[in-house]
Image 1 (cartoon, helix red, strand yellow):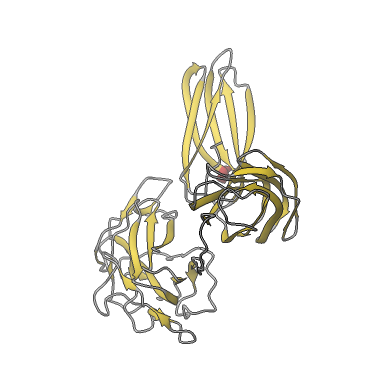
Image 2 (image 1 turned 135 degrees about the horizontal axis):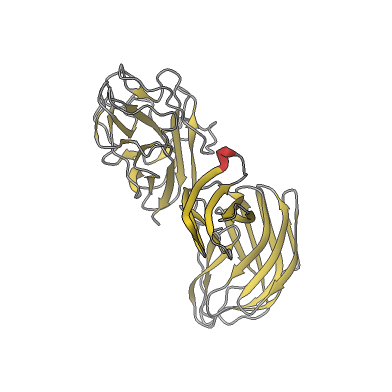
Length: 405
């Protein structure tokens, strides 16, 4: 199994088998041993030892996953081994509290709180940068639906064991630290799940009056029913977007024939706004069973010509800000996803798309702080008369928002 991947990592599973008479076959399964869980069969004619087998399985959902390897030797004897690994996510609403911020201050109370994206069990490790010294473990902790206890520490870390925690707020408190001797900004990080926060240590010969506003950014993105409003009632959680059966008689598109669209929403107080980016797993609609694909490119899709892509809607209600709290910048579509006026919508013929790649591409931006900005995204595809027929054409899109402060 891979070492501690995250939800935006491309995961590879592998196995090594040894046998006195030689290994002839290794089968690799993911999350079960049913036929549909089989990811690769490696064969070794005549037998070899050791034998190695690996396969890429793309990006996986947050939580626990299981790899099973079944090896067969030259005498048809089999043996199997199972290993479990965890795919981690990222925390939100991160808050760090210190009782004193003066440089060199000792016996400073430390507290941490954040929001888990989903269920979590394991050891939370908080790591302090050079300059801090941890002098006492946390004394209490809490999470939704579970427990946080078994506290420990080293000179540079705090640890706490999470058991049965569900999505929602998690906190630890009661730890003691000594602040760095040098004033400045310091980044404290934690893992399982991952997050970070900054603290500002001040010089002890200064009397300052200051105010600060914590950086805030929220991002919701996911599949949404055709023609539904991308408004404040939407709570993005990824999901799926079935294009249906593709034919040469038309272009398959979001918001046509009940095909869902993608709703994306950002609120941030970042002084220079934010950028939403997208990455395609395959850069195409890909058939794993055959390796055939429908390539993605920047073009205007037409019936009978194969193609695939994404665009930011150009309709009057496709981008903007909620009318309930219309504050700040409006979204601006980025090339190549910025179709011309009225060229990206549910209407037949308005099918100008940007080509997707396996690297991150700018999708839309905010030039300054904005509240409840949204953009409706249309996924579109077409085939030609000679596009090979398969039932498993697929792609996975990863969206990331970055604030510029």
